[in-house]
Image (tube, rainbow, N blue to C red):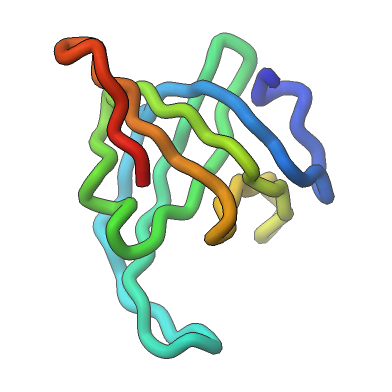
Amino acid sequence: MNISELSVGMKDVSLTAKVSEKSDPREVQTRFGRRLVADVMVKDKTGSIKLSLWEKQIDAVKEGDEIEIAGAYITEWRGSLQLSIPKTGKLTVLDKTKKGLTEF
C-alpha cells in the first residue's frame, strides 16, 4: 500500500517506507504506566506520514532505514494522519547490507 492511499480509520495496514526523520524519545504516561515513545516521519514515493515508535522499537530504527510495517492502523492527531503499530502488528527493518531482516 502507498502512503497517499491511507485514510483515518484504516486497519491492518501494510507498507514499506523510508525513515526520513526521528525525534528524541520522550516519556509519557499511558494506561500501562510510564513508557518511552519517539516519532518518526516515514515516506515513500507518494507521500509521508508520522509513525509512533514505542520502547524497543525506538533504538531499532534510525534515519535512512527502510522499514516494512504490517498490521498497523491510521488515526488523526492534531489534524494530521498518524500511523500506529499495535502489539499484534510488526515492524521490520530491512537490512540491505546483510541481506536480512530485523523484526521488532
